[in-house]
Image 1 (cartoon, rainbow over the protein chains, first blue to last red):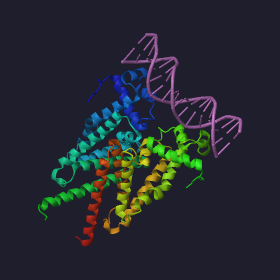
Image 2: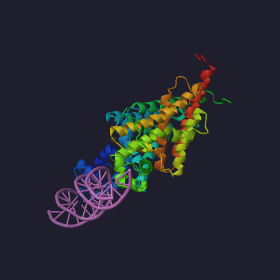
Image 3: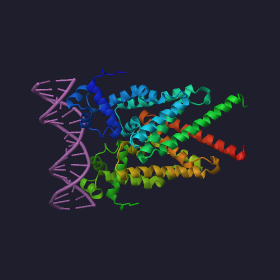
Image 4: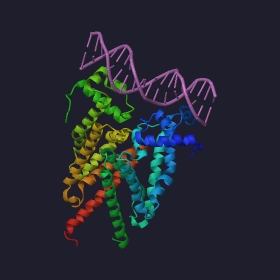
Length: 209
Length: 209
DNA sequence: GTCTATAACCCGATAGAC
DNA sequence: GTCTATCGGGTTATAGAC
């Protein structure tokens, strides 16, 4: 919410940091790397940010604020069905995965596991990113209405979808092969089909006794 | 396969490395940290290992070779049912999670996401660890026989179980709260119950036509 | 706000006596 | 095999002119 004023140099540093943190990780990206990639000088970076960790905070804020316009809207542009939107979102992760030879997965997940004891503000922003993602997917499952069983916890299912994505991306990155990701998504799909089938029977037999 | 001769000092260095890599990560653990924790000197470490990365290789070999005696056997000692063994394994991760205030998750998963472009031998050993885990769980699902649908791919389901564990651990570590892990395991449980129910109907109606 | 130079520190790894 | 001392280099961050 405390979004600092946008400034071209600051933006270039943030953009460079998003790229490099995703490609090499936070610890393996030096301030010198950031400066080279952003075409900036040490003085500029430390003018806009107190230190390297504050660049990370800016990156995590950018992801959190951009989840709608940068992630969901492109993935959902041509998909209306709420459940297909979930798989369209997963498909967008798969695209980036294969486009980078299974090198680039989920930048938030990578940072979450790289930073073992992050300072509280960093941890809170990682959490906020996961929450925003989960809420969006939960919204899809809620929009699916009675296609899913009435007693099904939509939030649990959204969390489960996130674990499937993060775990699948982790395995595919390690194997340098999209197969494990596909297998995980396929199994999630069959889980949802079973749920839809169960909801269907509930509607046919209002009182199965 | 190329397991070097066991030596007390070497073992102490490996034990220290397993602890520190799991607690702080590979990059944030310095050689000096390893030496202090192991009670060894620089000369000893570099006598047994060409460099820091070779300590990591030793750690990953130890995990890979120890998955049976260190992980599966303790978790399965009092559980015979093959499907319950899967959840006993997941429960052992939950125990470590809560015992460490949701700080310690899966050491392999953390390393897999921390090391973005690992040297080939490191990547292969990460992969080997995931494979050994998946094979063990696949064995459980195969042992479940016709309690699971005949056409179900046991390997896909084992991979899916791993993504659930890794993703759940990631979210719970970030939130410092076991709730997301529990939600993921609960959903996996309901998926398996649905599969068992479907296998049951298949047995009742051999030719549903 | 931008630039250069550099301070202060920690890193992995090595040398060489014992 | 174990120990101490240290090298060379990369790190984050700062100082101070413009």
